[in-house]
Length: 213
Image 1 (cartoon, rainbow, N blue to C red):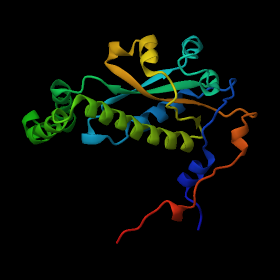
Image 2: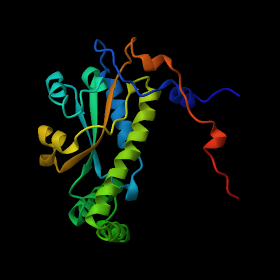
Image 3: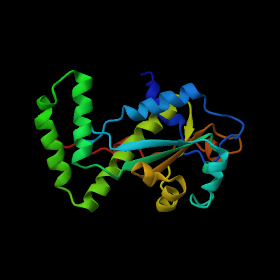
Image 4: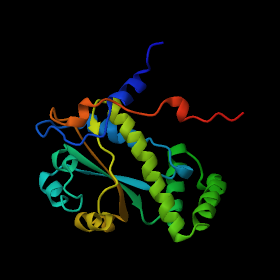
């Protein structure tokens, strides 16, 4: 059986630790990547996240200490920062419902049931639970972005290892009602990145799947 193109791309990708600093991700590919992130499924469909893009070398340089001097940040073409919205409340839901109604040519009242469900779910969480829930949405987006990167032959590296409060302060993310959750530096692998020649290693599929019923 011929291998699916998606699986081939996923086997090609790896967590790139060093990028080729002479190569930049073209704007058209970056746009496709971000569109892929925007199309990600999220809980309730309300998209409570933002994708912050950084490509200015001076700004990337200012993040070195915050990101523990990791070479993937120092050498990337662009840095994607996945952020959770901090103002997901009744007003956020109202604005989202109005957006849906306008986009689908509906009266806002036609979505009253959906709106009530969203508000009941969100307001039923403690602040701590809500923060974790919002973080989870960013992880869903990350998975999609890594797959889209692979399909576009863009190298990437998923990262949790950084100081979120410090990064938020440096970039002024609070002004946008955002908190950073995850980082994805992107670019093209350097020839001397030793991890690029190691090959994909994963447990056998039969060890990872449990069939019940």
